[in-house]
Length: 298
Length: 278
Image 1 (tube, rainbow over the protein chains, first blue to last red):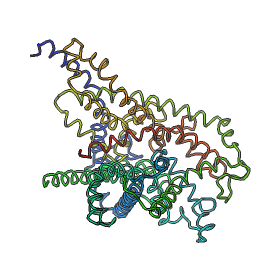
Image 2 (cartoon, rainbow over the protein chains, first blue to last red; image 1 turned 135 degrees about the vertical axis):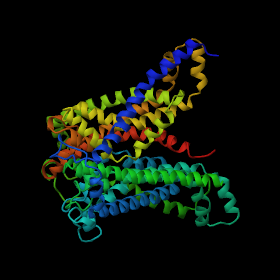
Image 3 (spheres, rainbow over the protein chains, first blue to last red; image 1 turned 120 degrees about the vertical axis):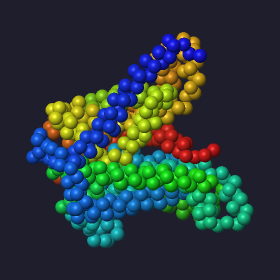
Image 4 (tube, rainbow over the protein chains, first blue to last red; image 1 turned 135 degrees about the horizontal axis):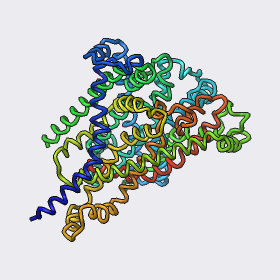
C-alpha cells in the first residue's frame, strides 16, 4: 500500500508534468480548432480584420455554392488517387525486385531513398526548373533523345497539373518501397518453397502469397499516404507557382491557402478548412471501422 | 531470399533497377551539374553531366554573397529553437502519456492523432491571425511557435512509443528505492530514452530547416528570410541566379539527406513493427 505522502508526491509530479502536455494540446489542437470554427462563422477578411462579427453559416453556403469548389475537389481526388496509385505500384514493384540475393542491393536501396530524404521544397523547385520550356531537362530529353515535340509544361493547365503529379510521384514512391520491402522480408520463405513444390507460377505466387501478406503492412501506409497526399501543399504550390496558369492547378489545400493568404478571405478559408478536415476525418473513421470489421471476421 | 534466380531473370531485374535508379537520382545529378556551370554558361541547353568548363564559381559566389550566410544563420537559429522546444515538451508530455494514468489521457492522445488530418491552413490561419494580432509578424518568435506546434504531435507520439518499450517496473523500482518521481524520470528513464531523444531532436530540426509554406507568410523582409525563402528567391530569378539556387540546394540538402538515410532504418522499423504480426 502506498502511503498518503507517496500518493501526494505522485499527484504533484503527475500534474506538473502534465502542464507541458496540456499546453501543447491546447496550442496545437484545441485553440486552432475552436478559433477555426469561430472564423468559419464570421465575415473576417482583409477589410473586416478588426471589426469582424459572427454571420452564421454564410461562408459554408458560399463554399458549397461556388462551382470552383467542385472542380477543385475533383482535381484533389484525381491528384490523390493517381499519386497514391503510382507510389504503391512503383514501391511494391521495386521492393519485389530488391527482395532477393542481389549484389549491390544496399547502394541501390540507399540511392532510391534520396527523393524521400530531400527537403520537399527543394525537390519541388528543382522540378519546376526541369520543366522550364527552353532550358529544362525534361524538354531537352524529349527533343534530343526521343525526338518528340517540346511541351509547354508550366503554361498549359493540363500539363502543369501533370508536372505536379510527376514531381509528387517521384518524391513519394520510396516511402511505399521501404514499407513494402519490410513487409516482404517478414513473409516466411517456406510458403514460396511449398508453392514451388506445387508448381505454382511466379504470377500465382505474387497474387496468392505476396499480396495477401503485404496487405496488413501496406494498408496503414496507404491510409497515411492518402492523408499526406491530399494535404500536400508544398508540391502543388511550388511547382505550379501558386496555382499557375490562372489558378487551374489547385487542389483543395492550395486553393484554401490562396484564399487565406493571397486573397485574405479568412472566414471563407476557415470554412473550407473545416470542410477539408471533415472529408479526411470521414475517410479516417471509415478506415478504422473497416479494419476493425475485418479483424472481427478472423 | 535464398531462391535461386536464373541468370537471364537477374539480368532483367538489374536492367529495371538501373533504369529506376537513374530516374531517381537524375534530378539530383541535374542540380549538381547546374551548380558546376561556369557563370557565363548558366543558361545552356546542354544535358551533359559535367558541364563544359566546370567550375565552383557558383559556390564561391554563394558564400561571398552575404545573403546566403545570413539566411543560413537565420535558419539555424529558428531550427535550434524549435529543436529545444520540441525535445523539452515532447520528452515530458510523452512520458506522462506513457507511464501515468489521468483523466482525459485517451482524449488527449486521440486529439494528438487527429492533428495529422488537419489541413495545413487549419493550424496556420488561426495561428497567423493570433500572431498578427500580437504584432509578431516578421519575427522569429511567431515562426518558432508555429513550427513547434506543428512538429510536436508527431514528436510526442514518437517519444510515447519509445517510453512504452521501457518496462514500468524500472521506474517503479526506482521509486521504491527512494527516488522521487522526478529523479526516476531524469536518472533512470531519460538516459534510456536517448535514442528516441536524438530522433525527436533531428526530426524537429529537419522539419524547421526545410519548411517553406509557413515561413512565406510570417517572414516578410529579405534580411529575416530562412533558407527555403531565400532559395525560392534565387529560383524565381532563374536567368541570373540559377547557379546560386543550385549550389545553395546542394549545400542545404547534403546534411539533411545524409542524416535521413542514417535515420531511415530506425524510422522504418518504427513504422512497420507495429503492423507485422510475429
